[in-house]
Every structure is written in C-alpha cells, then in structure tokens.
Image (cartoon, rainbow, N blue to C red):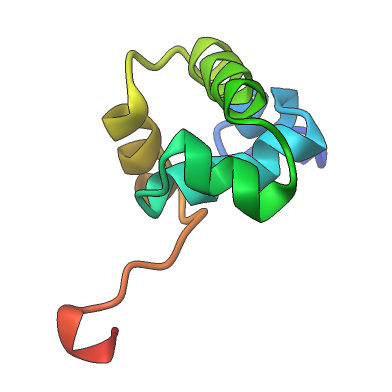
Amino acid sequence: MSPLTNGNCRPDPVERLSPREKEILPLVAQGLDNRQIGKLLFISEKTAKNYITSIRKKLGLANRTQIALYAIREGLIEVKPKEEQ
C-alpha cells in the first residue's frame, strides 16, 4: 500500500491539505473561532478564515461542524469524556 493511500486504496483527502491547514483543522474541531486560531498561530482572523474555507473546499465539507465531525471520524483529534477534561 502506498503511503499516499489509506486502507481503501484511495488518496487520503487530508494529504491534499497544506501543513498549515493540517494544523488548523484540529483547532476548528476543538471549537476555536477564527480570532482564537489567529491569536494562537500568529495570523490574522481573516487569514484563519481563508484557511478554513480552503479546508472545507478541499475536503468537500459545508461548514465548521462538518470539519469537526470529519476530524473526529478520521481520528485527527481525540475526544475525551467530560470527566477527563
């Protein structure tokens, strides 16, 4: 199996994301807004928004909620029970 494919022998959509987009995707999934992402990564709120739009388009998703669900489903973020938080 090629490193560019997952178990289904299809390209992994996450591989299409830039390194910065891969950094931002889990932050969106954790519920951070554009301003918080911008402050955390030292980019403007508008730049954060542009990256998120690019992530949505590359992954074929409609909104931030779908980005979060995608990240959880693909194991890109760890979901902890409320007691552990």
